[in-house]
Length: 559
Image (cartoon, rainbow, N blue to C red):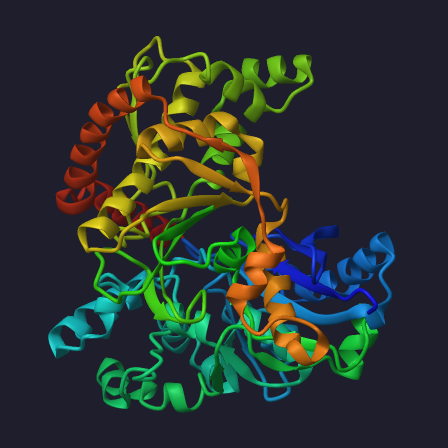
């Protein structure tokens, strides 16, 4: 039988990456990335230069089509695979990333009349300007006795669908009315590929309050929030919700011409990018946890049980692997935090020294930070530079470093920032286990585990756990490809379900990171200090919120 292949398309924060994988052997035969030309839009709109507000993060949907146009044909060229050998396509996307579209699926922002309206653009996952709406959702859910928020750790996030859509309604009602639907960007890509309007149970479940048995919250809840939202789920969020691994449709003739693939190729229901790393790491059993480590960090846990866990971003039945409950928690600044420090805060002499040695600033700092023993720098940081997603679920929190002196050096601060994210991960893991969701095995995937050995050793030492590393360089893209393989089905020579496909197509590296006992003892002590800061500033302190309030007041006054 002729070899069969599948394509996985991973839409990240800064670029889109495409891999092609052998259906039987797995792994990555070839990969290619396309950077988003418009990047992340945080200050002003492209073209008009119209200023954006505080905590905005937009993108341009044309950048996503460029990934389809350039990277898909390129992996075919690099691999030598013929289009007719590709039996399935899978898509993963950062979430919750949403956009308003018309009845034909055209984004409103590409239409001339809406080019200068910020709310017509894609709202990236880290758009936090809907915090007021999220707060009101939380308050009303509590007052009205609604129980659905228990599945999300008791709080809704400004990053999620309903808060973002409500912000559009409040600030740009004409855009809300013009929108035929608000869609997750992953679902939009699937629509662009197939012409079919479907929603993923993954993104709907984790980001839009949808439940396998209960559906969306009742119309009355939305009416009480705002009478204008009463029919939200019947209109703006309409669409069949399909389970992961199912076939959303087949590649249309137009999409086939764009990508260089064959019409009729199976297209899978979209999945959240980090969640694709579960299948891409080969995690298919209860008690396994995957850490998807990149600009942000998602902690994804599989379990036979559904319980309430403090600060989780959601629990969805069949939300990652069919037959299991998938729990999501996360930290919104990890790689972004280290990047901020290297780009904005290190002194000039560090940049000069790194350039002289022919290494990146990250590498220069990592090498020197690795020479320090745990606790030697005398610093403690909290990892809230982009707010806190779990367990506090508060986007208004901000960064903090304690212990700075006139003798503090850049590598010491760098190590403290690495450690802060590991402490945040341990706090999340403890919340899972306190609720009865056991973590027996840990996998790591994404860019950071392969680039920063010190980072991974710190995680092993802080958590006291062995960490296995996914073998695939583009684990989430491979995970998307695995979904494409299942969507193709056994009739096309593929797999019956996600577990069978992941076991065959995903692998881990032989090398693992094991905790060093003497480091574990020191970090146990340091972690107790982290928890003190975590509770004082995260649960009871108002300083960070007051600083933001004063900042917003001055910005609004100057405008």
